[in-house]
Each structure stands twice: as structure tokens, then as C-alpha cells.
Image (cartoon, rainbow over all chains, first blue to last red; front, side):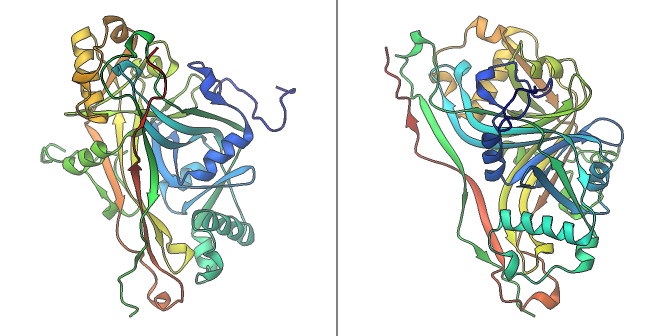
Length: 209
Length: 209
């Protein structure tokens, strides 16, 4: 592991992909690009009874950390704040892969899985900076236009950072890969591209009081 | 729990939502509708070293079960096939909620979380039926057009069913909810709708040999 370039994550036991290892990469730029495109992460951890819990949450990569936040009184943040082992996965679905056989049907996707433990960001200024980064990542350019955040709002928000040290990206791209003898089978084969698309913004209909 | 109507899931310790309980429902129809719209589930379980692992996978709800499948030799299926506790979460992202303050920024979404253990579907016919259901759910109408599945393909595929018995749906919908004193703040407030959208199918460019 000591010989790995700094632009790649070390391969660890839990990030090593055994099935179809060609579809995995430890390249930092590839991992960051996927994290920077996604909007929702799924975080897994052991719940109070020890069984797994997976919850969706907004997130942002800021440098070499992933930031998540939430209510200081919620189970989600209080549990993660204890430094329990967690796994954060972001998945971008790129297409349905329609092959000539059901067996070779697949999905095109890009995903990142990060392992580690989160650390609580302490102090008003540091929390504010992380919340600014999160807001700017999800809705670029808005922070400075918004009603400024209050001391109380920051105080009742838990902001966590997950170091981006143990991570792997996985992906599938391109057309279906059918068996040679199926190539003449009379059915459409190809990819239906899928993309998360933004519609026209809908102004808040609530009257200004 | 015995008095609950059959159209609702029982509230258990791990499905009870404490934060914003109005955004949770145990209604079976609501849970099923979300599962039937999603394409990718995130499954959390304890990996070989005991720490959480979250992996994305295609899935389908068939009746009162959720079906997932994969290579019989992969870690993912062999681990889940052992009947380890798992958590399956499906999240549909519906929009970015732009409030007048960063604090009230949010996301509109619908998610389902299912707890339980998976059971291996045994026998060629039962596996075939589940794979047909999965294929028809993800790509309706194709099964009968495809090159028929072979006995070997079924044999090297593990098909798992997760009973839909302990589940909860969570959601947020509608415009931002700002503080009354912020309603006049001079910034756009509203919702940017988000939707997973299919593009024009791209035919497989591979020559028919």
C-alpha cells in the first residue's frame, strides 16, 4: 500500500472488488467526480439493536472529506456522532442495459462506497464553513443571497465530516455484452439512458404574509 | 400490533420515526408505490469484518416480497444468502427545496426502508419465476421476446426474497417552510423538481457477427 500513488486510494480488504474487478477503480479523481455529481448518499451503520440501518441523506464532498448534517437531537446524527463504523454509498444510475438474453440484462451506473467513521465538526465558525460548503455544492451561488444563518440554527445542527481515505468506485458503462450466438436474436438490444433531470423551478406559492 | 389493519405495517422499534413523525407512513400501499417506482435499492449488512457495507442493486417487489439477484459466487449474494440481518432502502429524489434561509433548505423525496433477512429461492422453476418477475418489472414486456434463459444461467444465479413485513416509508413534499419573518427576503424560494428521465434508446452498435 505504501507504493500507491497519492492520487489513488489504498485497496483494503473491504474495498477490494472480487466480482468483475475491472469495473472498480481506486482513482481519487474518479471517486471525487461521482461524489460531486450525486445529491443523495445512503449511509449504513449498526442501529441501537445492532442490526443494519441504511438512511438517505444529502451530502457534499469538501476537499478530502464528505460532509453530512442533521438535527442535533435526531437518532441519525447522534448515532453517527459517536464514531460508529459506517459505510456511505452514492449511486448514479446511467441506464438500463437491454441485452438479447435476460441473463445479460444489466444497469449502467457509477457508484462510490466510502468506509470510515465520522467526526463531529465543533465550533460555530467551522460548522458554518461546512454548512456553507454544503449549501453551495447543492445550490450553487445561493449562500450569500440567503437570510444569514443564526447562531442558534448552527447550534442545533450537527455537522459531521467523514474522511475520504478508504473508498472505491464501481461502474458499468456501454452497450450490452451478449453471447456471440445470441447476436442475431430478433429483439431490440441497447441502452436506455437514464438521467436525473431538473424541471422548471416552482416558486413557493405561500403568500409573503 | 395485533390490532393493526392488514393494510399497514406494524410499527417496530426500528421502523418508528422519531424525528418529524408526520413524514413517515406505515401504509402498505404507500410503501409498495415507492418500491414499484424505484430501480435501485441500497442494501446494508455487516461485512466479513463486522463493519457495515452498503451496496446498490436492482430489485423488484413481487407481491409481499422484494427480490434481488446476483452471481452465486459473489460475496454480496453469498453473504445475504446466509440470512444475515439486512436493511434495504429505496430513495426517490423529487426535488431541491430552496428556502429563504439555508436552515430550511431541504429535499423532496420518498423513501422506503425494509428490515429483515433474505431467503434463498430454491429450485429452477421458482427461481425462473422470480427472474421473470424481476425482468418484467424493470423492462416490461421483454421476457417473452428474449432468448430463453438456460438451466445453467439460472443455476449460477442466486435469487433472494426479502419478506415485506417490517417497513416504513418516509417523504417530504411541497414548498419550502420558512420562518414567518423571512417571507419577504429577496431571494427565489420554491422547489426545483427532479426526476429520473429516460432518453432515446441507444441501439447496441456491436455487429451481429
